[in-house]
Amino acid sequence: MKKNGINKFMEYNLLFLISCFIGWFWEILWEFMKNGNFMNCGQLHGPWLPIYGSGAFLIYILLYEYRDKKWFIFMGSFVICTISEYLTSTYMEYTYGMSWWNYTDKPFNINGKICLPYSIAFGLSGLIVIYMLVPAVKKIIDKCNKKVLLTIIIILITVFTVDWVFSTYYPNIPRRIPIINIDKFK
Image 1 (tube, rainbow, N blue to C red):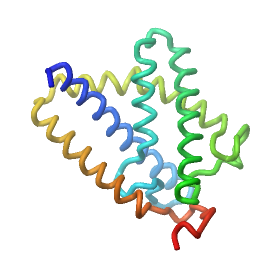
Image 2 (tube, helix red, strand yellow; image 1 turned 30 degrees about the vertical axis):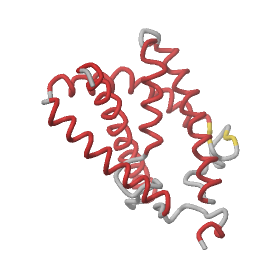
Image 3 (tube, rainbow, N blue to C red; image 1 turned 90 degrees about the horizontal axis):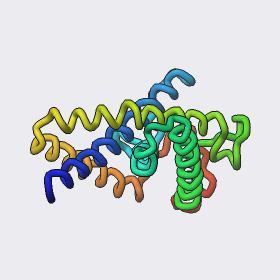
Image 4 (cartoon, rainbow, N blue to C red; image 1 turned 90 degrees about the vertical axis):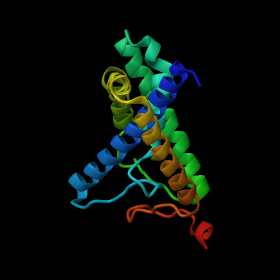
């Protein structure tokens, strides 16, 4: 792999991992503020939520070249993340018979899987990804020892992958998740 290829590999994976962790931390914090307890809200067991990492990655890949158009970044992020959230929720309900989130009490929701307030938050998050997170990731890659950083990224991606495979068969099930189809776990 050429130097530019390695830099892109590190950029994509670091952006994904950092976004997964930020999403996990945000959800933990949000749960604590709402209910006063700490709870891992995702399907995986580790400190990451892949839907946040995937959203940030898609925003970067699909919208970064339009970074001079803030409104376009907002609307693109709104659409990309809303579709991603709907599809992810549908997949998880179908695969596991459970719903990890439910927006039926939120305004302008569709099947409780997506809602307007969170879609607006996704649009704002896209601005954070493009104008703050991507430049921070690029700066980390420029300033850090490439071999050390690459080793850390490979280790983290490996641990993440092991967690993902394990969680496919033994998902983390937070206490607040309603089971739609218990037969899947008998």
